[in-house]
Length: 592
Image 1 (cartoon, rainbow, N blue to C red):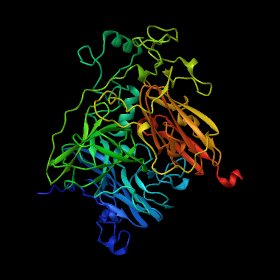
Image 2: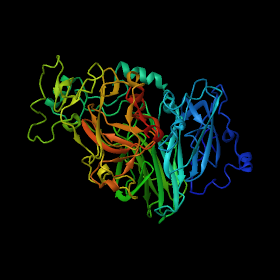
Image 3: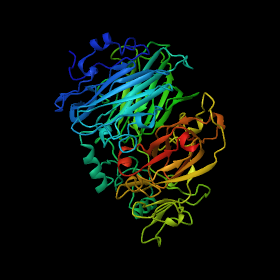
Image 4: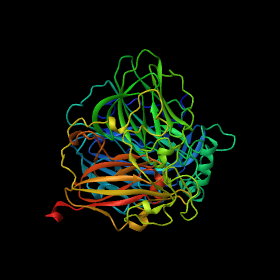
């Protein structure tokens, strides 16, 4: 018997439901929620469905409402778009115009940001930067021409609603033929579910950053740490296992709105080429994704085509997107394993040759631990046993201790633009470029793992000019106080002082991570090209870059989208804690 609370797992193909969407006859045949009504009305008393349906056309109605989300028997107040978590798959076509009417049935303001989609800045959906937000009971119409193709997603940019289920996938079909052939097309949207209210999580993180971590070091643990290592970490009052701020069991990791025990599956026939559009729609989680026994060919990153590269695993920062092609063989099923970076849990789906077919699920691997490289140690030094001439032992920096290459409050290492204050509790002494780093926990595995240096743009970049200037920004934080910032300044202090770019200016941006955590940094409104060793014409275009702990990363940017744009860490609680700025691009009429 079908569970009325959970819809069957979707089997989305390139043509499913697209014909006729937006026509009056199709709208009349849609369920009530797809015509713009909220689940649970204004009172939040309905049951939110897991999974998503599909909408499309030139006019699309979306309703944001509250209800109860049930995951593996646990219930939580949640926010849904058109009655489901994730919200409906929006399918558009390059070259069309679209109007998305978003009605707010919540008792608080809401918004939708079209992540990675090129839109006029006043349609970008960021309250306080590009528009005022959508008041309760109001409808806001987003209108824009569709100027690109690829895999994207959408989510709230109001408060912490993204954590509560306010997100969904978005696919834009190309005007011309796809550069790769495939037989089936599926969306896999990963996320993190919790029964806690997100403001409760934020409050506890500010009172103690380790509150939600279950992988702390103790005298009896079996982490591969020597006594000397433990003493050094203790002097710093830090944990080498401080990988993710929130982990399982606080989080249950979801695949298309379903927990690992809820049977998410994608059907295939042996020999078919299957396209998986994998979106990390989590609020706060990195995932390491693999399909044991089945290689994956990466064909796109953040919606932009790349030259195909075959790998066995890759790390996804929050909000990153990878499209892959897989060719299942004769096995009945293959497990799609999205293990959280700290290896406390996983999201799970199955590639199945028939309904109900299942593959063996690997056990969680041992949790990774931070090392000297993650502390910004001087990588040119050898035989130091984790010490440099600057690190280890007690220091004279106000009674705070240093370790390896990361020093607590050794602010003499910072450039003059960085504001020194209580928002900075550590500084990377010798940050190095880590474009070739596959990510925490994946550096010593025996199989092939993707890193940014392996990505190469399929189509040549339009602008290959040498950058005219270098802009260096430091990612800064205070873990104990849970304060996050750019250059030591939280967003509340710089919201009216944007980073300014001249019209059509070509800039190289260098991000230096002075913290012990990886940050997925996202720029709204524009794509940038990663400086990853490829030629300027083939540097991969992205809108998210992971900056590894104690490391640096660079990208080239052409400032050709006028307006004010958000620039932030996509870890939701880091953004909410201050790691956000506004980028302002002067329009061509102002530059003339």
